[in-house]
Image (cartoon, rainbow, N blue to C red):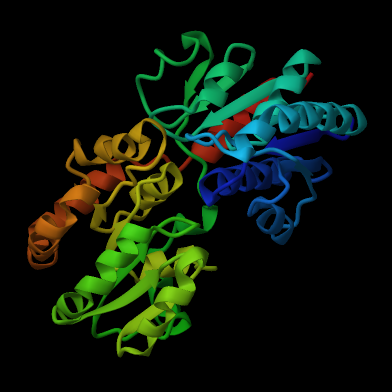
Length: 363
């Protein structure tokens, strides 16, 4: 059999990068001799995270459109043309069997060129509300792997495959890792642990909330593990000097911190929601209102409407946070039911199911 070649593109945030890496890892386990190339936006975090995972990456000079008039918007047509030209060059040289896009700026031009060259393409849409790039690309894609139901209004119905989102395989069995996790993060086994995750870039409003509510949280006999994001580390790292508080910019072992956590406060990016369903820890979602079509709220509501998590809107944090959090940590029946209902929504085989769709397209 010939040596297979795959190009994957996804980036801008961890929510696009890690699904692409998970898909590549599963393909590699099935086809150990295959060649892989990632394509990202040249100044985004994928340019570091992908090589750290052992894969080669090429960068495109591309960025998204801003919502207001900026110099960056004026440069967009030039960047798009440049990225289309470079994508064509990359594809012609690498000769992939299949091109896979998981979202982010770079996947648009790359999949557009792949479609024009009749190379099979797969879109992996993480969110309950797709971005404009994937909507445009879907018309020519061979398969569209989705994580939420009722996306027929955005994508051709006959191409949709309901797979769930790819997640890192190391979180599938966290129950056996709890003692290792407490030791790794130097946590007290006699205290409950609250994990705060604001997404790979951090979440300003959640950081402000935790800083304000730190005494309230600690008075509930909790230890706090707070991922504040690279953008905010300088502003919040001094809180680590407080007993039972750890502030980090990034978490390198999500499997272990999930194993250690008793409660979670999180943004509602698609990858985080999918991971938390597998983990099944009692969770409060605080969706970002600053994303396209408010898709984080829709992601969270898909879980909340099935009684799998709690949700507080950013605009209601000041009046509702303490009462909602108090209810969660003092009601063991609520914790148990949230946990059980959340786990029912998990898709542990998502990565394998997506790779099945890719394998079908190999000529």
